[in-house]
View 1 (tube, helix red, strand yellow):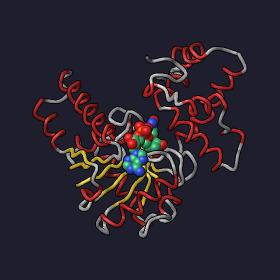
View 2: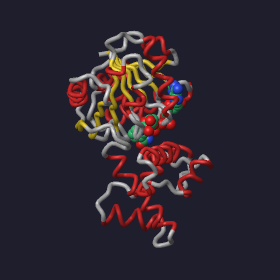
View 3: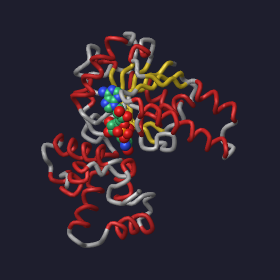
View 4: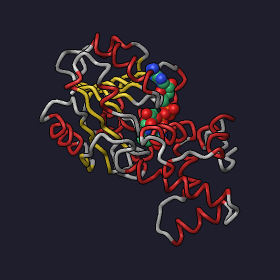
Length: 281
Ligand code: NAD
């Protein structure tokens, strides 16, 4: 299968690695040349680590990398059978992207979004053929995390969700079918998790590292909420919080905090920018 991925940031690069490893030809596109170069380096680095650990042979690793085509030219998508976007979490930008993509790809091409929170129905609504649209939501880092949410929209044709679920399973992932509601399963549960952690901090009940420590050491979580938010990126995470809050008609359970908003506004995106709740410089 020929798979096009748009957006070569944290998610797009990881997903490209997953599908190239599964044997597909991959076209990975980004509007930003540096982001594409970073993605190529990070995928190569990740494959090298797997080779060093003996999980891949050098030959398999080279084969996987050879299936990956990094490009800035959307025309390279004209023979794709599946196009999945992982660009900025902004409805209007995603809609505009699919208007362009649909002009190029074959009629049978499946269109998918990796959105964390936006309505799949509203992205699909921008398409000429919304019945071929679906959500395929990976978790970060995509090569490591098993879970993938598969989200049919009301417009999605019958049977496509099951086809996509089987495809995702063939990539060695554990797909779960979920309804098209804000944040789906995981990001809906995660909003109050982050929100309450920030409120505990703001109320002076405990500091960040104590909250992170309590949840990892005692609560059994792999990462505490502040470490995790810094890992996801506050640009992504703030937009997701705002989108879930708005989509739930301003239900206070999902209300974003000013602490989170200020980090976003300052460009303190977390690990990727060297500073977030914690310092990484
Ligand atoms: P990111 O900022 O790391 O990467 C986004 C990339 O998209 C950037 O390289 C940017 O240059 C590119 N881009 C933006 N607009 C574009 C356009 N119109 N055309 C081509 N390229 C464009 O973001 P990310 O963390 O990879 O998140 C991407 C998507 O995946 C978002 O919808 C986000 O909600 C979702 N998501 C993120 C996470 C996470 O933990 N970060 C997890 C699951 C899903």
